Image (tube, rainbow, N blue to C red; front, side, top):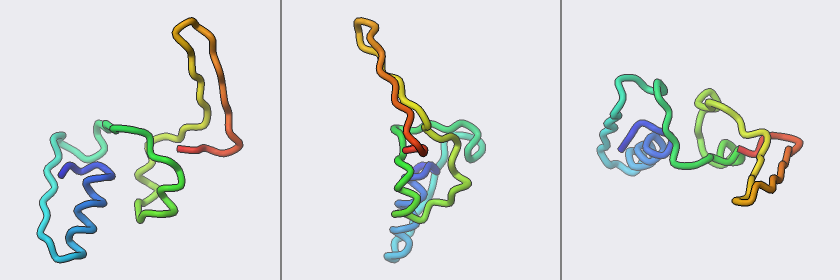
Length: 81
């Protein structure tokens, strides 16, 4: 497993059930280069025990542009992810 949020959480849960785990991170340091397979919703921090200091940035606005150039913007009252 890698040392990202999913790998760390998975390893934590497996060790709670008695499994031995090993984390292998491809980069020389943790959080030096963050690669994420997707955006993690803000509500995940209420559901799972991720520390809030792991947040790199907050998604506070969205702008989608169609193939034809038409744009749509959305700014929520509080960050969603």
